[in-house]
Length: 308
Image 1 (cartoon, rainbow, N blue to C red):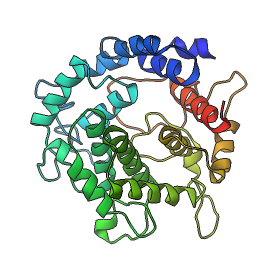
Image 2: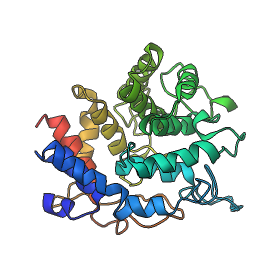
Image 3: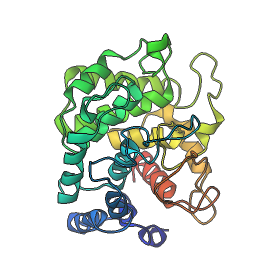
């Protein structure tokens, strides 16, 4: 299994070395450096426009009037992929790309600069994660997010339209942003407390069930996609808790068993539930096929949960 994973793109290989092997820090560093110059990382960097945008837009591709289209090729989701790939934020390639975004990318919602964020907490969670990862100041975005936490402990992009119940989709985006911010800066007392409350929102529901009835919230959350985009699923939730560190919580047991049950006889996990929309280039062979991304993520979650 490790040989198959290590036969993939540098974006996969360096994380396999870090998370699943006893490779030395130097081996991991050398492999990670290749993300900027080879494979998916280099390919995605090459698609950045001269003004710093991807597909001509910050959240939405330019000149896209189709109400059913998706924004996966625009700047936000391109940067999220580069973060997922582990592009070294200190590399010359990353610094050049981020400088262009900083200077030129503005939100369609209100013409704000990219790292100032916009109004929806799900998007601002992404901004917090990207800014913290790439070394940009997102203090204002984090302050806004901590002030928008709902009474049940999570967040919802529909709150401005009256919703008082949190959304798993929005909450996981915000939690990932607050975690990246905390890891980069140490966080603030308010942001650390908000992140802990947000974690409790997920844990009180076992990462997949209604708190009130115990019923499964969404069967699609047991189908594992990559890239996850703005969507929640059980594997994404568990991978967040793994990244946050600390000891596993028994309230995750059912979610972990759901991941374990998806392992194929050959030791892989499949790609499932791909979120439709135009992409820059494919990262996997399609739904129903073995997925290096899902296999890596599942194995490192189980390794963390089982304490090996």
